[in-house]
Image (tube, rainbow, N blue to C red; front, top):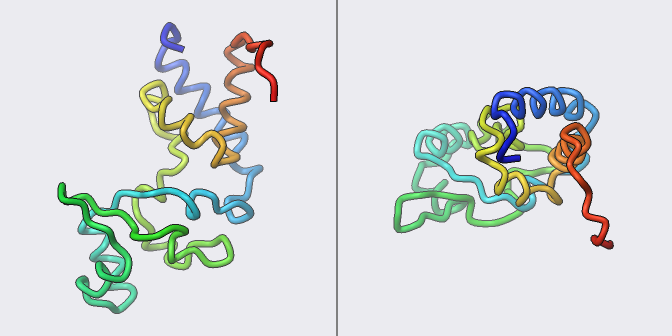
Length: 146
């Protein structure tokens, strides 16, 4: 992968994502909402707490974990806003939720570690990566056994 042209890899990943994503229903899966820790910023927390009619303090206490470095994540999994595999606050969801699985973003090669972390979690990532292997004609390791 290192030797491959960055723009060509992005173009291929974009095309695969565009072909594969519509065939997979995220609401049939919901694994991302069940197991991801998404970073949340103050603006996102303000908007969602306002939508919920809660003070920011009450929202933070109920839903957020704050690190000493100022970073915030949800304080439990699955996401408390997941209901029947659907986001109950979809219009107010966090940027990290909107971006996932991030196959539409440039610089795929810079996100390989993260992509492979989610390989078994997300059927879209799994299928894009498997098709990418075929498209790029990667040699399969014949010693691997399931």
